[in-house]
Image 1 (cartoon, rainbow, N blue to C red):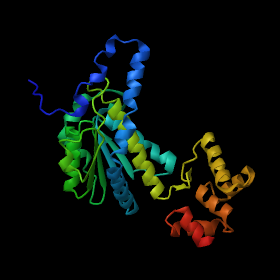
Image 2 (tube, rainbow, N blue to C red; image 1 turned 90 degrees about the horizontal axis):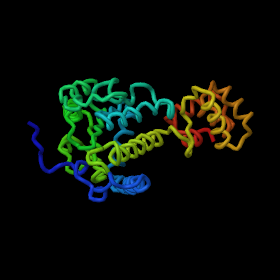
Image 3 (cartoon, one colour; image 1 turned 60 degrees about the vertical axis):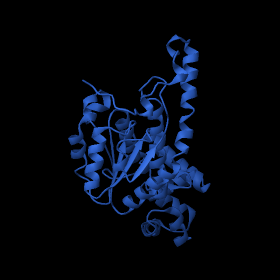
Image 4 (cartoon, rainbow, N blue to C red; image 1 turned 30 degrees about the horizontal axis):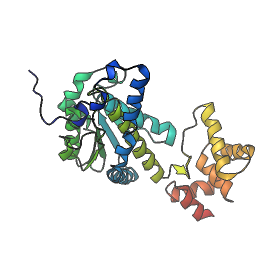
Length: 300
């Protein structure tokens, strides 16, 4: 017998604005969904102070050689996997520095492994690689997923910092988190379908978190991606375009500088903006921790 606990998570409550959604024409259904979606950005805005604290702690951890580990199940876990996976090509993050742990493993990426979220022991096992100084970031709409709870408890036991992202200000797992980012997205259009507003909020928060972390770590120059991995033709063109946008120098000159720098866009950028040669640019960037503005001051 299943016992329904009280109070329930906001995402499990019925939405009074959509009671008659199954009797509406298609356009009206879509208008209701869209109007509910429009509330998500405001809900995220309300938790920016907590998100900023999570960003700062993550920056400190990664600068110190530690790692960021995401833990989640279902939609929440898939959002985390997506964020971790995209950081390598977008910002050149070394494999293993940002890792996502999905309840049910790789099988759960493309198929439902719903029971996996109830496995506290599996969550704890997933957190075994963590050490003191790492960041354990749990993602769960309800704020009570056992897999995530097991991971956060094990991470805390190992001395890691813990963060919880939920859509429930009263999340049961909040006591396990040093920081609770509680995005109150309220009831879903379809009751309990947290792949909707709660999932959208998770995507916004994870995008903002990882992007802000990468900016703080110097993986951009202005708003340009300097550390992306140019692994295909489109990205190689983008890399040259980025150098043109940053310097105002013709594309042919930027391509030549990039070739001389063995494809290292930051090194090429520094040689284009200063009189430094490739070796001097590399040394300046190393001394500046990879932050272009600091390197420019050193060789300017």
